[in-house]
Amino acid sequence: MSLIPSALARVLVLGVAALALVACGDDDEAGSAATPSASPERVSVVATTMQLQDFARQVGGDRVEVTGILGPDNEPHEYEPTPSDAEALADADVVLENGANLDEWLDDLLANAGSKAKRVTAVDGIELLPTEEEGFPGDPHVWHDPDNAKRMVDNIATGLSAANSEGRTTFVRNATAYKAKLDGMAKQIRATFAPIPADRRNLITTHDAFGYFVRASDLNQVGTVLPSVSTDSEPSGRQVRELVEAIRAQDVKAIFTEEAVDASLEKQIADEAGAEVSTSLYADVLGEPGSEGETYIDAELANAKAMAAAWAGS
Amino acid sequence: MEWLTDPWTSEIMRRAFAEAIVMGAAAGALGCFVLLRGLAFLGESVAHTLILGVVVAFLLGGPVALGAVGAAAATVGLSSLLAADRRFSVDVSMGVLLPSFFGLGVTLIALTDGYRARLEDTLFGAILGVTDLDLGLAAFVALAAAATLLLAGKELALVAFDRPMARAMGYRVGLLDLLLFALVTLVAVVALRAVGNVLLTAMLLGPALSARLLTRTLWPMVALAGGLGTLAGVLGLYWSYSSAVGGGPAIVLVVAMLFALAAGGRAAITLVR
Image (tube, rainbow over the protein chains, first blue to last red):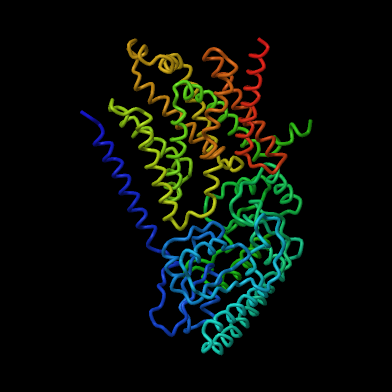
């Protein structure tokens, strides 16, 4: 008797089980769920990051139909575009990108999709913080500074107006209203940090995504667990040692992780240095719908609150 | 001498050293049998099939090491089932399993929105983040490997050198094969954490190759390979501790340097004679 049939059957069972898993995982594909609008008068906008999707909805209001590429579970630095992204781009009037090499995968995607859309780069006119990272013109995580966010909103309003001149007054009005909200957010963040003494505002994150936040809120970035602005590198023994020494020297309370993925390195470092691993910050993405980081403003406020809570404790 | 003792004052480094020493010794010693049996492909295949376990563990929210052990068990079980049919060799069964498991793993990654970042940990290891579970697993694997070599080393050697003879002498060759696969797979699970999927084969075969060049008989070769694996683990971590090179890549680079030294030494000896 050959054993092959039963072995094959097992492989098949495994395969079916895997497919079932796949089907479950695919259901809540938040970012790209919305289909481009059929109504001709609305401007069809495709936006890469979740922050840009939020800004575009705020500025465009009813006049735009926003399709997002990245969802709460997509790392912008490592995103692998899907065919449905190309489809959305092919039909888009306006494409919103962050720029500064954060969403550089858009270049190939746009070329392949044969898109005629107007391309708007949100970081245009924003002075980038320097970074040592190869291939980055500067730190791309500009939105963590409220002033930069306002500039991004202006860029979006200008871009949308160029694509749809009848909407100009609406876009400008919406942008102005939203920028007032951003001012309110900045004020709230300042108030959140006000009671924290300067020598306690010591931030350690998984990757270097909070340079602008640190500058805007007068924090001290002690270090990062992964030695780069992107999320894909392994720290060396020396880098880990230097981080541990810095945590001890400056009496840092918390290491902030950005993802719920295996944070064993953060735990080891925290254990050794006598710090805690603290709740997730919204670094590159926003939260799921219904979470406390659902919108850009919510996410930034949640970040400030999480940091202040970790630093306020004795 | 501070540079010598300094790394050992750090708990993270002590854990990494423990993992590297155990993994280096076990991978080096077992690698000799993999090399002699001409099963280099086995290590590579096992490394790739483990990806599936890692992804499934992530999906289910369990520890990565357990997922890898599960995938390892599935690999060994299925391959021995396939290889039990005389028409299929181990190479063939692995040739079927590797693309199936690896492809399934990669497909799951692509379709799982939550699996972002940290895939590099699987590809290149994350020895500075080893958990208690990882260390326990490494210790268990090392003990299992040592016990097997002590109790069944002679039989494994016979099967490696002269398969028909072993069969004629009444040894259960298939069972001994399965034992070797199981051990190699377990070592692969440990090495996955230490040096990662891509560099794992180097850890298994590098020390064994170097030892093969410098020894004439099996047991000195096994001992030397285990020693070289350990040496590479320790030196690699010292290097990583004083540079910007990640732990896993540093260890594997030391393995390669040791091999270059061994090959050079061998060539020099031949020339002198």
